[in-house]
Image (cartoon, rainbow, N blue to C red; front, side, top):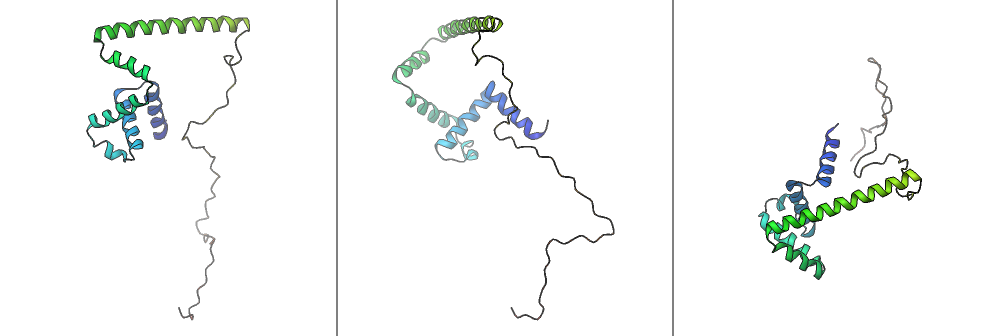
Length: 161
């Protein structure tokens, strides 16, 4: 794996399984784009100012009902919030498992929707990944041979400039 592939992998992992560090990076990039501030200057700002701007913008973009739900969640007792999170996660896991079982059963019977049927995928490039071109063989010049000049320049010594 070369340097660029390792960077792509790191970025992909940050996207799939965000860490605190990758989330702060996201917020700093958001601030940089939103307020037209170079990223290296955003990194020098106090993090609480950057986060306050991010949260303010996020809450302003929410619908009123969604904002009220979030406010209730923020003011909820931490233990109560944790129980609610666990219950929601179990419900989501159960629904996901049921959906997977239904799709698998339909696929066995040949009734799966075409969008879920396995397809042959052509290999696609990742965004930002450059195409790899084959290099043309380079002929090495003979050791005693004069290199051929592509540009032929003649100077007139008698001209007045």
